[in-house]
Length: 285
Image (cartoon, rainbow, N blue to C red; front, side, top):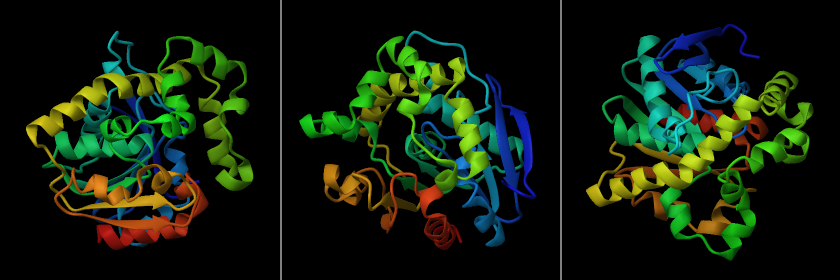
């Protein structure tokens, strides 16, 4: 994976982040989701480099081989605000004051937070397979709860750690054939490390508490994404089933947003990397 990329650890203050980066040209930050690592982009990143972009693929704090922050009672150490701050400092350390960003799944929420908290740093934003946490919770009905019950289970204290670590393969599916052998190895290692599992669950605990509060404050203050934005959604996931037209939701959060469906299941960067890379290249150029 990531042939020709630099693989290193960068101190961003509270934690060190494991990051792979390569290429020349306009910088692009790719943010993974749960329970993946930065290696989920291994089939997309080289295509972006070939298209003339500089590509940065970190493991978020608490994920993969990046450091875990000390636990806080309000879960703020794993808030999207904290993660976004890490990534701004990471990009500056790599020489990128202004950049484009794409975030998938939980990384989508971090990409949103980057655009709202650091608008001068983000040139363009791609949001993938998600709507703002506050919008999902505002629409939470029995159907959502049945499909996305893990949001609420993962937010409980202690029990999800015990359940997941007892049998990680029962919780997290993925095969070497579909994911790629090295990507699969990283994913399996992460889901077997107790500190990483706890940090990944803290992501959900922050989501239902401090992240939700931050989004409600954004809406009250009228804060929106002001850079050009693109929404990508997987046609074989449940985004349209749950939300109808997801772009209608995102238009309330962005001044300039368009959308492109990707023929794929949820993990689109692994399942249809050609289409994802093309959509990102067309938008970021």
